[in-house]
Length: 402
Image (cartoon, helix red, strand yellow):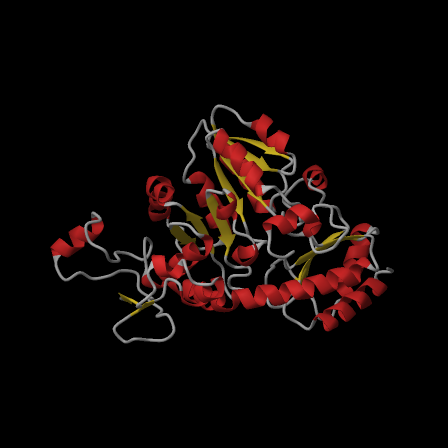
């Protein structure tokens, strides 16, 4: 492989973000292909035994085994690191593999984690169930309450973990303030930035130490394959993340990395178009339902904080139907354009009932504590014409008796 002229890190940092999403991290082989090459290989050969030794002990650059590094995966990792403003990216097979790696890689028995209680269901499971099995204590707080973060700190606190906006309630957390609390206590701040995307929010600029994504969502953006990525500085990678990544085998496949690279080229365009649609849908729904949530709405309680951290309000619209599960199901079953699914960030609009799907693994009391009720719906707005979406959703609301 050879690097393209002008694709070094110092140059790409100065490019506009849309240019970074198309070209950062690109490498070309001797064939000078336009699209990134797809390297479907498990291993790599060496000219000499000495070269193999030098690659394995770090004295020579090059690839050794695709569980550790692969040219196609490396291009995706570099492009994401440039976008996020970090030294390193490590691409994983799924989003949850990224979340797990960001926590387990740097923790050991006896450590303590403070987490926002409003998390994606599987992320809550990590804190509630997995970490305690390995002797890692966890404390959950209302992420909006800065005093709660401070009071939860213990001498052995090593990590703060949160997502903002939260899935599915759209709770917003003050990233800069929580980062300051974490750093004053000697802890790292890990942020799940899936809902906001790197297009709309850059947690590293607001003090986060580690940022994670499910690349399955907006990065791919077309419902094709799974993936995740952890973004961090060189020290955390060398001390913790890369050894974990290398030895546990959570790497992304080269094919999925190639798909993600193609997705990144259009992510900025897609996310802004989806934001346009979300704003239109939210405004139309707010005329029919009392509890509609989107940061662009004047009624959104945390609007000022959300738009101080995010460039726009995002692609998700959340609403609460007063008739609970039965009314929510009538609404869902009446939709003709919007699909019922549990994914998000897709080019196709998706409606989700978190109570019975994405957060079902949590106990009823936990769901209610998070504000997830039987009447709550999460809408991921895609790329259809917003007028068609409004018509479809309005008809479904009518069918549900609203």
